[in-house]
Length: 137
Ligand code: FES
Image 1 (cartoon, rainbow, N blue to C red):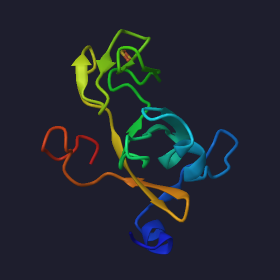
Image 2: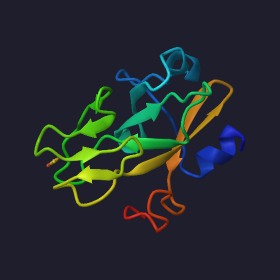
Image 3: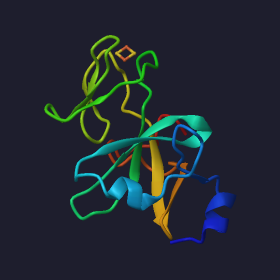
Image 4: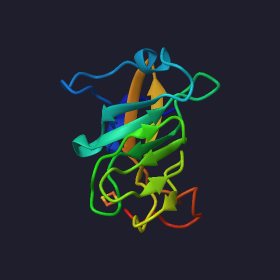
């Protein structure tokens, strides 16, 4: 882990709730495995954080902004997909496109927890889903 001060220098911010208050990691990790918790992320973008089997948060945060025309969308726990209500795009759990018209995978942000604080920073390395430079960089 990098100390928060260094991460802040790299553009990291604290994940916040709808009222603008930082959300402690323990609050999200108290929810069931597989929960996709929506937080206010970088530049206020709504971002899904995933509670993993091992009781940690996935380092990949998924931005709730459809790559078709920008609608927000829910997680469907039964189908285990993000499903956009606007034109029917579907994305797998990691944000890869399952069905268009969405042309691109969902944007990622990097998630790090330190001292119960959730830090979000821009995802600038290769996109692990495609092995390529991310489209948003
Ligand atoms: Fe999501 Fe069109 S905006 S499918």
